[in-house]
Length: 207
Image (cartoon, rainbow, N blue to C red; front, top):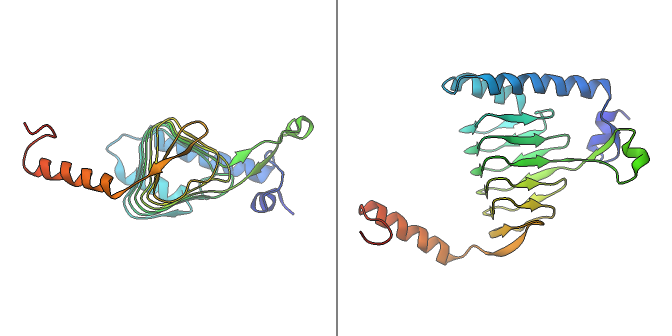
C-alpha cells in the first residue's frame, strides 16, 4: 500500500513520501501565484482554483491569501466564498456544498499527528475528511478539526473550534464548538422585516 493509499484508508502515513512532497510543492507554487496576482486579474484567479481543486461549482471566489496542501482533495459547490487568510490542510477530502460563506482567517484541518511521541517523531500523520453542507455561514477565525461534518443551513460563530459534528439548522459557537440553538421562523421573520425596511428606505429604528 502506498503512502497516498494509506491516507484514503485513514491509517498512519509518512508525509515525507516523495510523491506527496512533489504534490504539495505543486500546490504551494499555485497558491503562491494566486496570492501574488493583482486583485483585478479575476480570470487567472479562477483558472488557478480550477487547476488546484478537485471540483469547483459556479461562482466561486477566494480572497487571497489562500493556502492548501494538495488542492485536488478540495471540492466546492456553487456560490462559494472564502475571505482572506483561509487555510485548507486537505490531506483528506474537504467538501463544501452550495452557498457556503467563510469569514477571514478560517482553517479546515484534516491532518493530525499521533499522541504517541515515538510515532509522531517519525513524521507519521493521519487524515480524516471534513464535510460542510449547503447554506452554511462560517464566521471569522473558525477552525474545523479532522473528521468533522457541519450540517446544512448552519451558522458557526466567529472564533469557534469545531471538534465534533454539527447538525442541520443550528447556530453553534465556542471552544469547543457546541449548539447554541436552532434557527427558527422568528429569525427568518426578522430578516424579512429588515428587508422590507430597506425597500422602504428606512433603517430598523424607523428613521
